[in-house]
Length: 414
Image 1 (cartoon, rainbow, N blue to C red):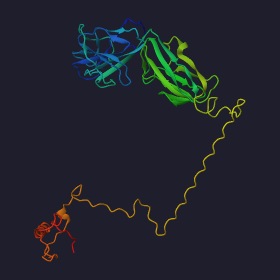
Image 2: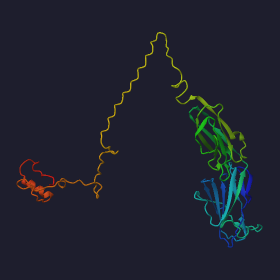
Image 3: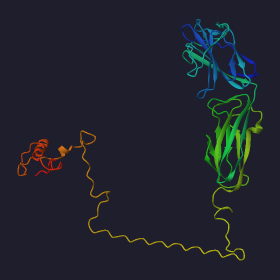
Image 4: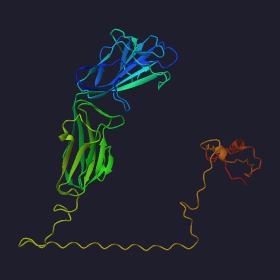
């Protein structure tokens, strides 16, 4: 297979040269698979019935693709060159420009990946593998991979893509923060697929003099006030727009200050209109400062006059300022040892907590008091009969008086 195909007409078709392969192993294979994957500028036509198509969206660093996996259930002998008996036909879409075709031969028919869409089976007549006796087979054991191999083709259409730069106006007062927004538009008609791990193009932005960048776009600073911005992916679809916005603070008015932007990076032979690949944005500083100081309208500017119209009363004298009241003298500290710098004096005693409970159990009145029995003369008998029993005995001996006099007598322990 040729590594590159050029000059395809958008809206036409492209017949892929039948890919040939050799079993470089030592044993025959019962089945092999051929996988054809194309980027979005190409599409599959009607496929044979032994093929299935999968459409996969873009993910990670890969653009959206369409896969056709064909199964060949026949013996493949070692040392023999095989190829499909019929070429595969692809559609070249109107926005095709630079596209990729990859062909993989393997023995297990693995799916493209986790983002695989719904399978669409082919409806055309089945295709078989045929031997190519005139082709030179590969050397035994010369395969770079075990169980599979691949080949890639760069497919290029005779199409163009117009990349354009546009921007809004820059205007504000000194002290204002304004937005510098630069837009990159692919006006088509073709979509642009750049090199792997590279941006389609780069935008070099220079901010105007007399300004400070307070917030940058996702770009790289390459110099004083100069930034370089790439595209979000390595492709740019037709009619796609990408924006890069900078926040600028106007520090001072500079005559002729302006911002600029231009396209750099990879060569763009497909872009036939270089006039819109660069631009300048003048900075217009309007009015005075946006702050409170200075200017005729400020509170610090201008002059005052004490004169007035003839016959007008003289201005009243300003009221005298109130004299500050003298502070009361501080009382001297009393003699004696100085207390330590603690919040309280003396230091508080921590409360005792019941070890078996989160909150101490409240003791009842009977448990908080000690009750003693008394003899007929009213003297403690010293015969402690228990807390509750002693109280009941005392209550039974006192038959007169109010309810309070009949209450248990509580005294301290001797």
